[in-house]
Image (cartoon, rainbow, N blue to C red; front, side, top):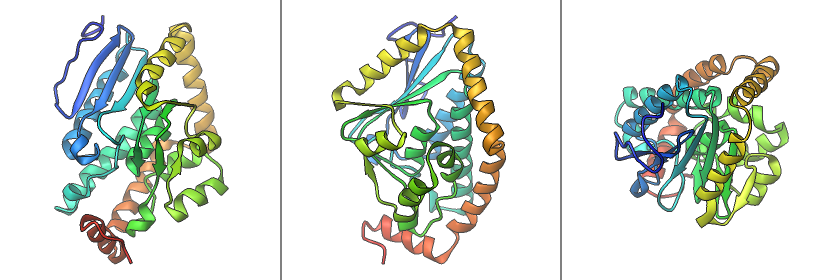
Length: 267
């Protein structure tokens, strides 16, 4: 049975809001608008725990992931990550764990995204089954502009888009708009900003028209096909994480991160 009724919230954390859209649909909402919903340790832990709960939930069939404020998610919160090596290791580990879980969830995952989605925040879109994009959405992977290698994002991105588009996104670090994101397959629908959440709910209703077991089996088949083509995602993430942590310690990365924190361009 569902833990809460339609319209009720179960907000164990003020930075991650949980709402029952219907008995079979749950919405998780990132709620750090003052920090562009950037990933803090607290937010990552809360999101990770909620995904763990969903794995064993046979009532909820669709997860909608959204955000409040001007932007969807700015990625890792550098202000917290620079405090220590332990902090960046923990936060990065949580990010890859969340991305892998989103990809493997038995539920269908829909992201309703608006404004800016950057780095690990943009990777949430790549991990989802569907993305309903507000018309003001921009997606970017600016790691190279921070002196970082975009390694954590690569395992998912290479499963979603071709090599030519990968080069464009990862080597330039330049964001793309909603229309381009639709063209290359990172989003499935573009809607006016104030309709994104409602359109995600309507898409969830479409999914619920299918038989629950059939939809779950179809998703399992799709993921099995993906694994056959590219190999186990978790193994690739483990290698990417270690390389990412080495990259983080490099001189270019340290200069780039300081420049970002000081709100100036990296030279």
